[in-house]
Image 1 (cartoon, rainbow, N blue to C red):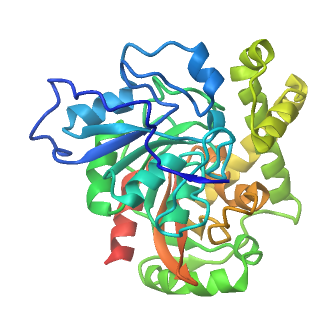
Image 2: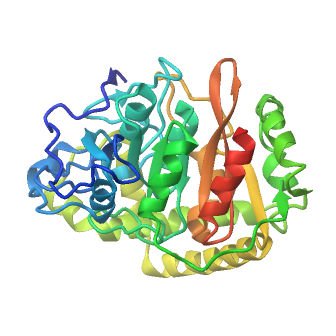
Image 3: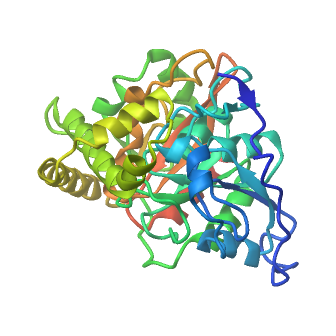
Length: 386
């Protein structure tokens, strides 16, 4: 897989609207847009040439794009994405893999791969992406950035190509918290204020499978958090199979919704997908409504468990239990999903922070809070950064 510039060369930036505020909270900052999110006058290619050819250019900005413009940020261009956002690898069968400036020769992570690459490269200050199964958080961790997946539905999905609407969420990537805070405030809809967290959940069952060298590298960041919140190592799941069951149920529902969103187009147009995306859509096409309904029952039970455990608490887990893989290695989705699916299946916010390095490769730590606690997670990240 060859490396590419994150900006899409055939989609030049279009001028900002005259109504963009020159004195807004994001004035002077540049943002890039993942190519599953609409920008008025530019085609949305969704990482696939046939999608690009069979869909007209949108006439209006996605709501998230419009808000960033109104807050004074300047649009710097659209950036590459994994095909139809159905990947966590940061590769694209047609275009290549956006460069990882934090780990040259290694994967950026996907599917907001171009957003992460552009921000980490300094081509933009804000990366607008989407996160269904970790597609903001994994590339943020692999490129040494902050990545916010907000509380589900706190940021409008208007103007975004869907993948699995029950889990889809626009998200942000930045190099610093000083940029992430006003960008998040621009996009987040108001919600009832949540009580400040008191507990730090470090479940033994989630941390025990993490490789020892990853645990050791993240120990310093956890040591900073321990005096701020009371640690609780109680296992998250009851029984050895409950975690696996939740991950399987998540994959089942994601696949069912992805095929519901795109199955007609795939059947009609027969697009050429890369091997990973093709196999996932092939499996998705076979998920029955009955299987999806059964899986939703499992997810509802798991979400209720998480909501109970997250009351006045923050769950800390590795964003990815690995360093960025080499470009020559396949992305291991099966190792990532058990950690990245917890937030989307429960609708909770998750913030990944650049927490450590192992062999000079970046590692991220994810902070997950109850619904509506996005601002508390940003506060905790500020304390960790300080």
